[in-house]
Amino acid sequence: MKFSTEDLIEGIQSGNKRLIGKAITLVESKKAEHRLQAEDLLKAIMPLTGKSIRVGITGVPGAGKSTFIENFGRLVISNDKKVAVLAIDPSSAINKGSILGDKTRMEELAKEENAFIRPSPSSGFLGGVANTTFETMMICEAAGYDYILIETVGVGQSEVLVADITDIFLFLKIIGGGDELQGIKRGIMEMVDVVFINKVDKDNFLKAKSTRLELKRALDFIPPKEKDWKVPVLLGSALYNEGLNEVYSRIDEFITLKKKTGRFEGVRTHQAEKRFEYWVQEYILAMMKRNDSVEEAYLQHKKNASAMVSNPSTEAKLFVEKFLNKKED
Ligand code: GDP
Image 1 (cartoon, rainbow, N blue to C red):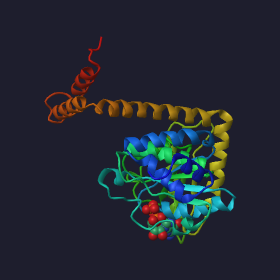
Image 2 (image 1 turned 135 degrees about the vertical axis):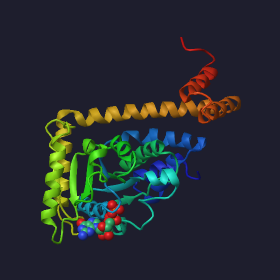
Image 3 (image 1 turned 45 degrees about the vertical axis):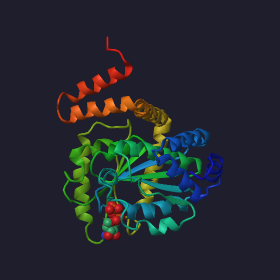
Image 4 (image 1 turned 60 degrees about the vertical axis):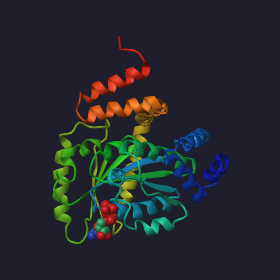
């Protein structure tokens, strides 16, 4: 990395988007030396973080997420706030192709001085991607972004990962379209805080109302995630900029409620603990594999596991015992 940690910190604090981008590339890198520099950087900026509102946004491809973010982002800016847009894209982590990143997205928002858009990281397994996305969010917070919108696609496990790094979760739904496909039966409804039924324009208001009724019924069966919060099901049109103000004020209301009850800090603390656990595992494995003979044993046990020579958990235990050179009591 040709930029010193000091250069990057200064760049972040002065809101220099090019240097913010470089800092993000640094935290996304898996190289050991980059990781070290990333840790120094993150340590230095930590006191500047924590002040944003972290919003997760999900919906099937075509639900209108980028259209929504484009116009919602501009609404945030018109309220004198800065907005950063990040993405967690399961397709890019799994097969290097990308559902979210391939098209030209959010062109108008990208031109705004007070907006920063970062496409999803293209490598790493999904859990890892979510953890570096958290670090990217720290950089954006230190750079003074008030709203961080983290977009993901309604497929795979990515919603769970996004919910683990955000304060509020927004589900964009299109009218009809098959509830199963859109996540009602996949547990998304247990995670959402606000639902926005999109594309309510032209002559489909009546259909939208029946979709809303259906969703509300489904929500009635789900135990409330936040006490005193009934998940609102809003109608609107991202394309024609309708209903976005209401989303903005509902987010505000939800965050205010969570702060009042102590859940805001409570959930963030719990999320941080989970991330700690993730990194403990990452580092243990990385440090173990630094030793050649350990790496060799690791590969051998992994091979045994994959060839079903024995149970994967047995192989994992044998490997760890070999490394620690002792048996479990
Ligand atoms: P994404 O895949 O979820 O990011 O969806 P896009 O934002 O790319 O939108 C998919 C398509 O739906 C595009 O052709 C948009 O113009 C269109 N679209 C998005 N929002 C609306 C809306 O509110 N009304 C209508 N009629 N079309 C919309």
